[in-house]
Image 1 (cartoon, one colour):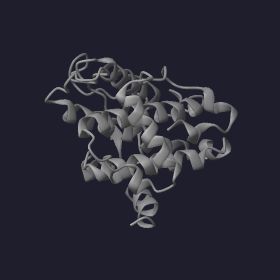
Image 2: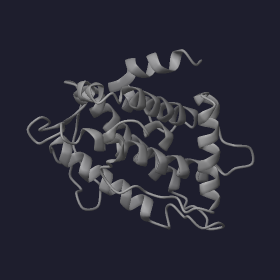
Image 3: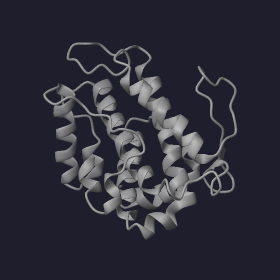
Image 4: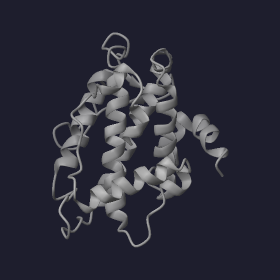
Length: 218
């Protein structure tokens, strides 16, 4: 949610264009509700499904918001994430990610982190722009496979957080963006935990950090 990123010169730079939720739409109202509850500082409460709301719509609004947050966070460190510095997409020495989207690239390919993240964010953007998957108009139903697509999006967005933490945290600290990164990631983790949206095994690269960020709030 955008108030997290008002500090620092670099905060205006995004990696991909920001995905806007149309003003006046019900999803825009939900986003405003999320911003208001986040402002209270209680993230566990902020991620809960508001009374009487549709789970798909709540997940959709928050998925768009996480895309925008990660887009902004990665945008601040693109100068440090290069073909030379990150020839593979990794999250520490034990975890390496290969890209496949099942459509254009069916067999997973090994590529540099900036290339992987470009593929990933472009793919997410295509899903968010698909009105049949992420309907913005009131009364348009979500497709049956919506939740499985949302889970895949969130699983892949997690990998960007994991890469930033493992490979670029020094740069984040130099830019004095660590509080923004930690708050954004904590919000993301509370959200995916609340609705069981990412398998635990996928979260292992940041398990210690997740435990550290979440134990205080149990």
